[in-house]
Image (cartoon, rainbow, N blue to C red; front, side, top):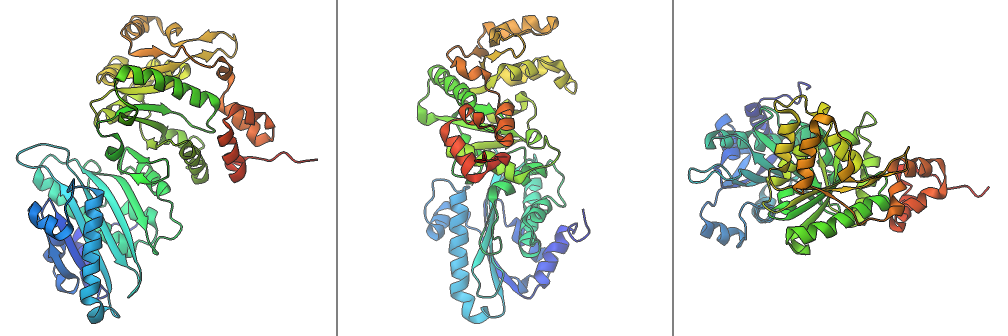
Length: 470
């Protein structure tokens, strides 16, 4: 960490207070005026703060910002930023417009309360001008506060709020700004699971790559975006929904990838007693998978996400190497059924004890944690490469000491064999398709759906080489 970034919270607030060009409003709802308080505490705030406000009473809040379904939401934050920024410009543009750049910092937060111990989270945002009278830029983030006590949560909120404002003003590179968000905070106090940059200060920024930074820099365990590429807070998609997840590298999506998901989906819908509207189907990639070549290849990552988006699939990127960690994460958001879709090779990995050496209870603990929320595995059969024989989920060879455990999971239908499948697709392996695609062998096109082939060829994804006419 270089010294320029490693600055104490009070020093950051004081530097902003001493910056004669910055002038703005702090609007905070829900956890006290923790960010504004920092600026008053260090002194010199009169040159920075035009106004602070907090409308705790819902009637006052609604009178100022309009009614809201949820007070701690992205929509509420956006309304606060819009309203306060417009007021600032309207009232002060003539007085200070040529000498100061205006900003609004806003947050709406549900901190730990004395009455209930619900999930503590919040939305924070800053809208700011880079130049006097310039068009504003904006950064919004969603945070989860992990401290046990209300006082500690308030302190952490004040720190990350100062970090966000300081980053917006002084870190021109978004990656650097993201790295600075947790400065002066222990890593287990706050998670940032959504970020969005917009405006002239951030030209050509792809917010999906910024989300990826949140995971790779350790600010959160998982991020999500919708099929159209919009970065979203995971709870907005997953809350109280039945969830079906297919993990993969999706390099590329093949007929087998889709068949596996579609067959699992049909079985899942019958079993979960939910409607199509209540089901979320997710494609998930692990950071480990994205780092398989040693470093993050941004173009490769975006190619995968674009293809999944073209197929109408929301995408999750997570740090969960082991499936039981993914299952625990999803169960946090829903009490409905969760299904994981996989091929037999992934099931073989689940029953490999070497992955659980760091758990006190070993594989028993891992499987206990995985299946405790009524989760089911939907397993697509595999064609043995050497034998050419079909290997369904129910005929897996596991270590002798695990056979009874495996049988128990089969008998109690925690592991469900996908029996209705297209046998032609069993011989399609994504690494083969990728190798053919990169070597110019047109046979790869017969391994992927036509819309996937089209997008790969038109955008030259994954090192695609057109076959020369010679």
